[in-house]
Every structure is written in C-alpha cells, then in structure tokens.
Length: 129
Image (cartoon, rainbow, N blue to C red; front, side):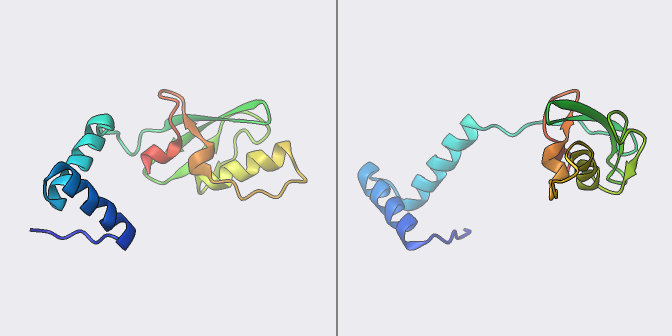
C-alpha cells in the first residue's frame, strides 16, 4: 500500500473527517479524490500529428493576431498583424514580439503558452505542452 505525506493541519482535517464519518483516514482521502474526479473528468484529447501546424491567435490591446504553431519544433510563425511573416523559436518569443509591436515602450516577459490560443477550441496553447 502506498503512503501519502500530509502537513499537520491537513492531516488533522483528515483525522477529524474520518472520525465524523466513522471511516478510516484512507477512506476519507479516497472519497475526496473520487468526488473531485467526478466533477473534473480527464479531458480526452485526440492524438495530433506533431508535424501538422496548429492555427493559433491572440488578442492584445484590442488587436487580433494569428499564427501557426508547429508542435514538433515548438516554433511559431506569426501570420497576421505587425510582425506577420516572422518566425520565432518559441511561443513566448512570438508573444513578446507582438507586445513590442503594439506597445514599443513596454518591456514584456509575456508567457507565450498563455498568450496564444487554439483557433479550433479557444483553449490556451499550453494544452499542447
């Protein structure tokens, strides 16, 4: 049987719940995990060809910019907006270029995995990481 390490305050809560429901501490943890799993089922994602570009977009300062992300290389090519045609080694590099194009005075540490969204599902690019 595996063991789970808990900090003292969490363990006290688990002990309290176990006494309250007259079950073991393990049963309390199992019930909590099962309840969470029912409310948050895992998302089944279809397998993608890593060499198939994924169309992405970002909205910054009221402007929509689009691009193509290639999962196999993690590179992103911006296809619209002020840096259209530019290729970047990472989504973050592309995001920083877009921010700089619209707000040159702003120093950007933009996280490209959160900046870009998938056109087909509207999810953040980070779901493909």
